Length: 265
Image (tube, rainbow, N blue to C red; front, side):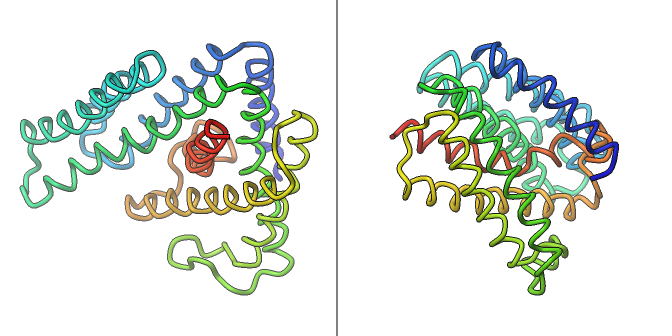
């Protein structure tokens, strides 16, 4: 790990840990809201390089409605906000069509994807914080991608021979994938012990393995989008790490699944 990466990680921990431990649900909401705005800006620059300001403005408005409806409204409000996001995206493109109408559906899809991917998945974090034992669940959702990424890196370097998705992420290997699952499961047991989470041994193993696989899919999905948009990094906000979407791509796939599991347990 380079000095800039270590510094960025330490700064991130210095901000996140006090907020998670002592800030309560509202602190997590604020942090997530800021992350959504930054992520939408990065996404708009990648997906709409010719008109990113308008795309960012619309997706921010739609995401704000969805964020408020899910966290402070109810199912009816959340459904209405989601519908507005879809209808507004289609209406915006109809009013500002691309030069070639054959690309209109693609532009609508890019708008909807930005709202759903960045806001729709990330807002599960404040929902997790509101659960009983929310602090421990938050640490678990942060630990699994980090532990999996660390294990995959070292296992891939030591044993990696079989590429996992060479066209999307050439450095990922199946050996690294297995190593990431192992370290993710270990991470679950550590958080389970420290946070006193109500997880049995079998549950902990299955949860760690499943969410580790989800984290890898989240990482691969962002890599696929970056290749489709022909960019190397989503942004530049974190030295040595690229953009914020480069850091939370795995988390975006882990949070909804963990929330569903914890809420139904």
